[in-house]
Length: 193
Image (cartoon, rainbow, N blue to C red; front, side):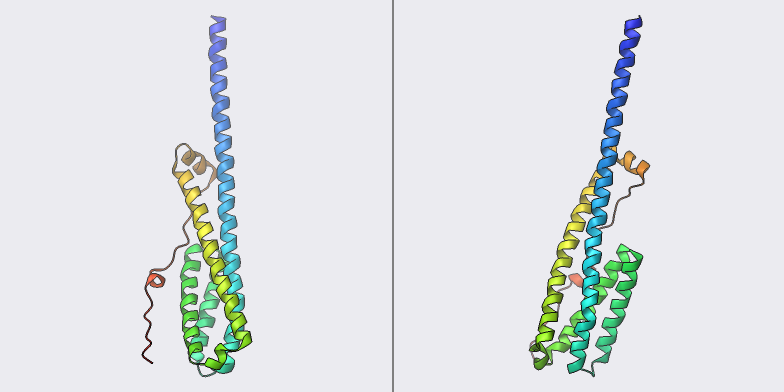
């Protein structure tokens, strides 16, 4: 009888140790995944700030050639200020919305550039435009990396028993960095002029 009780105690102890190991392993895995998402978001934040820093130089260069296009310059400045505010607030939805507005304002600025051939040939403008283009590519890659890490974290959180461990540790599903519906529309190009 004593051996039977000792065997049951041993089995229960082994099960508890295995479950504890599984809990710790899942908890640590979730913490690493959560930190990975934070890191990927920081890269998006970094690239958006880089773009924000390039824009005043681009606008100043264009202003020298097209001073009468003040509405476009004001739109870019307002969109840039909104994006800066949402980046400081670390609000993903607001960043997505304001990044879309800034992209639209930049598109209108680049349309202004098309009217000034001498501006398009300016070395400073070309360098700034290349820098901005490279930054846009970095933003795209950073957004893709972020969304992949969010996918991995959200998928793990939805699985049982990890969902319980995530709930206990306070790790929640994250939002994807998505493109606004307006940015998905095909632009209308008119070469009739």
